[in-house]
Amino acid sequence: MNARTRPAPFGLLLALLIGLFTTGAFAQNADRKGSPFEGIRWSDAAPQVLVRGAWYAPVSIHGVEVNEILEFCEARWPGKREKRFAEDLVEAMTLMGHTVPAAVDLVLTRVADGERIELQGVAVTLANRQALRSAGDPRAVRSAAPASLTRERALEDLAELARRLQDQFAYLELGDFDWKAELDRIGKELPRQVATGEFAGQLERFMAHFRDGHASVSSDRQEGPSTYPPFLLQEAAGGVVAFRPDRSSLLDDEHPYVVEIDGVGIEVWIDRASSSVASGSPQLVRSWSLRGLRNLELLRTPEDGAAAGTVRVKLAAQDGSTTVERVLAMVPRRPIFGSWPATETRILDGDVGYLRLAAMDDALVPHLREAMESFRRTKGLVVDVRGNGGGSRSLLIALAGYLVGPDEGPWVGNVAKYRLSSRFDAGHLEARYMYRAADERWTRAQRRAVDAVAKRFEPEWAPPGAFSEWHYLVLDRTGHEDEYFYRQPVVVLSDAGCFSATDIFLAALSGRPRVTLMGSASSGGSARSQSFSLTHSGIGVRCASMASFRPDGRLYDGRGVEVDIEVPIQPTDLVRAGTDTVLEAALARVLE
Image 1 (cartoon, rainbow, N blue to C red):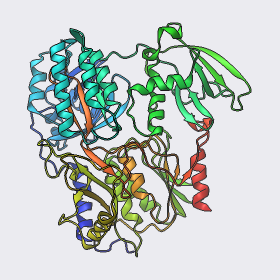
Image 2: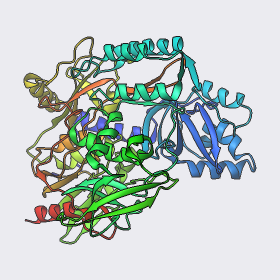
Image 3: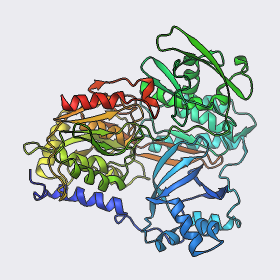
Image 4: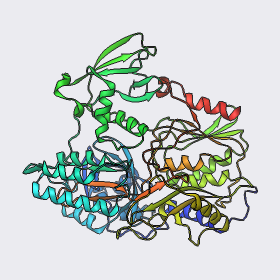
């Protein structure tokens, strides 16, 4: 197909939408005196911000690095950097030449556990900015949560939680969890004075009963550990592997597998950590529980007999013939997994294109197009989304346009409906590029694809109650001038670190001509999440507003996306000077 073929009307719309969402031109501009932050505090001259009831270190604001904003504030208003960042953020970004919409996307690092997350559509409000100004000193900490509340106030928050879940939680009735009985039990056991941090912990475990992988509870009153194990844990072929946080080596090269921690079997620890993990797919529960073992200090019991300040680890050789025991000092800083594998887009030996997408970020669409241009004459393509926790769908839409053959048409990649609420408008799923079957934006070919799926679609679970009509994500040529048909074999690499928009990415490409998924199954989650705070405790709650399915009727949450060829990772795949078993298998597949 000629790369400059005239676009179909809806393809042109998709191309325009990608550009608009990337630049922010599609959104209403923010109030010049607004702020997306409910509170700001400073730690070692770096800002920490309060968003939806939790504290974060901000990384970027709608694609603009926070460090760049701080440098600009210092240059323009010498000695007033903190004050201007807190009170005049929108003005500063505007003066830098950026358009700030009324709702911004934030990249943040959560203070409590060091996890890097993305929040989309955070409102920039005048009320936030006024609250920051009223604090007087921008270095002062403003907490959204009281240290404690009366039993009566806590009961009112429980009632509010029930109402809000019934109003906007799509997966409330998914599964056999008797949520009303559990809330009733929590209410009956409340003491006269309720510690907010403990209350948040109860609600966190409550929300973990649901299959919604996006569900979460947050409060700055929850106490975190003071020390952490000096290693990270991950599943590999043969068992759970311990490695150093800088990935310089395994904890013990000759004995990679963890058998016990503090004399307690590793499976017991995983079970303890899972109490705060969503009841999702087996791979989600196991992967997230292993990450949660960084909170070892909080998971210990008096019966464990662990020595304060240390951790005792029993490790086994690959063949199990020998074991060693190491006693290590706990460390004050939380170890971070970071983006892995730490690789870059390039052309590999054998003339195979390698497209690394570590995040589903709108800003990476130009990077994808540049890479695809360089891959025009390669013998095959490996798309690596391992460890990609999600974001937006624009990268999927852009890549899909290169994978439509001359005799192939559009296809449906996702089917969903959202819970009807006065808080959601009729275009609630348009940010996910999803539209109703009767939408006038479809081309004839796209409408045929939608109709074909709609006729045979049988969801494994029928959302009960008041939900919208079904919505559909359609993949097609976008009509972009640089787009062409990539006719060579494509291998997409997946693992349990893939989640949310990356689940959609994988499922939409699964089963397509010339495309093979390799590695291991994704975690599974698709939600159109919404957040709210409980009135008295200030506890933040996040839950799915959308019930999301693959075109064959399978849910994402609780399942994930399977691969065509399973390739277990080896312990040495987890360190920098090690191997990459999955990529090696992908290269062999492409070149076979």
